Length: 141
Picture 1 (cartoon, rainbow, N blue to C red):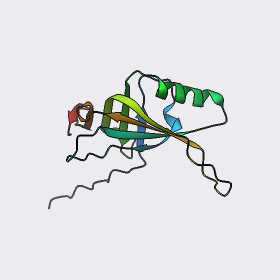
Picture 2: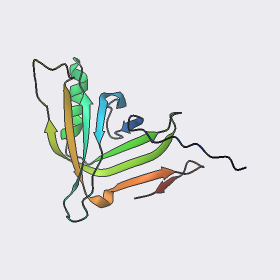
Picture 3: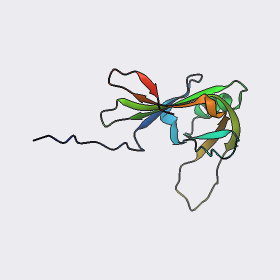
């Protein structure tokens, strides 16, 4: 009798985002909106990061200084399994600042104040990678 292998689905809340050219702590990145590709048009693709802000001026200064300087950025999003091991990676390189959104203030809301930063990149500077059993990256898209 063959045994069935039990699969754990990938979860959208198991990830970490790294910004190699910055000194911004990964824990400040609250949300990542991954690119959506429309193969019928040739516009640049977008990746969006939402940063959690704190009362400390230092974190906001790091975020805004990094986002607004003209140098190209690399954004790495790692999907994790239930043990915390990396199972997939999204890598966007040569990202350029597109929008900076300070959101909406509302006395009736208890939402946290976030800074949303969108970056554009050309499609060939994006990669979606799987990790094989020997922890090698293999490009899937």
